[in-house]
Image (tube, rainbow over all chains, first blue to last red; front, top):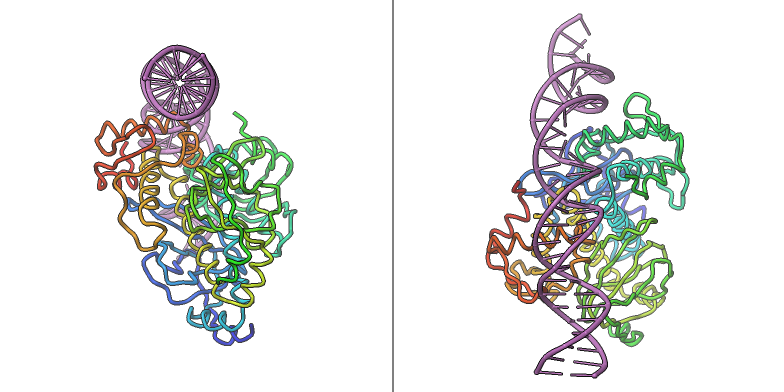
Length: 213
Length: 213
DNA sequence: CGTTAGATTGATCCCTATCAATTTTGGTGG
DNA sequence: CCACCAAAATTGATAGGGATCAATCTAACG
């Protein structure tokens, strides 16, 4: 696996800039070294939906050259470990471990996407925001290590209100109001708009799974 | 690849019965030979979301033994080609083609899931129903063959109104009303509730991507 | 200290959920 | 073949949650 490291190059991306355009065929792939990346899908009339938030150690790009109309954009400053897809093909043919690792990553991504479909499809605004905060809390804590069930009580929300809305299928005003309600209920506390402290994890978990209307 | 055929067994499932329970670890996988399968995720308080509709040739089950709280259920009568996961591991270690095929399938599923997140997150009821009809039309026509962009003008909707609602994130009354509106606009025509004929494909495509309010 | 993008708050409207009542469909036995 | 029944679908009336429109307020930055 050190062989792929030989073919790889580091690349730094500034916050807000696009990593992969939706049209571009993109003949290379990458692993996120540091920073947060969002994957965006757009309708023909301009509305945008964030379909995934990616953290360090996650894979970017298609293993095959099939287009998926997906745009990858740096949410924060991002450092990537890039390599050509041709190298991926060659090495995975020799070492089955790489191919397997890729399958594991894709399976996880699929599971995360389906989990989020449940959030988008049925849940109320309150449940959506609570689910989002739990998602960020869980991912921010355990450094990409699997099996971490607990999460940090204090963490930084990498997304803006607009981005939260695009990920949750809500308007920014609604996101703002739900955050306010959670603060009023002493479930969370915010320090400077972006930093969040979870005061009542049990209630937050409950709110993420039950509609209270 | 004939080797996996030797280890596989055929299995018939009646419409409506569960293939894989959410809790069950499931030490086997399967390929759909005929029929339609739905994948369901549920919240702790009982609400259910259909996260995927699967057609013949698609893969069922997790390649690894990580639980995903997913239930697979036969929508129509289903015929499966089942094999133990252990066999999958062994053969994929010898023949990299199988592992690659699995990765292709998973990548497609991921792309489909993200496409549907766009539908669930941002679209109106009218757009959702139009998107659903196009999805079924496209899959019903080309027998699982890739690259088929066109679709059948007449096809059978395999899902009940309740299931359509669970897939679209809508109530059955809303689904019913949108279908009625599409019929009134001469975009579609229904024969006996389940069979649908698309009268105006261009308008249906337009409605699936633009909000008309 | 001024400028500007982002976030919050308020008021109102509309789409979809909800509740309730038929109507239609599909399956079964007489 | 038809009457009957249960389940599914449709239709109608109402209400509520989130969208929308509009006006501050806040914070980051030169």
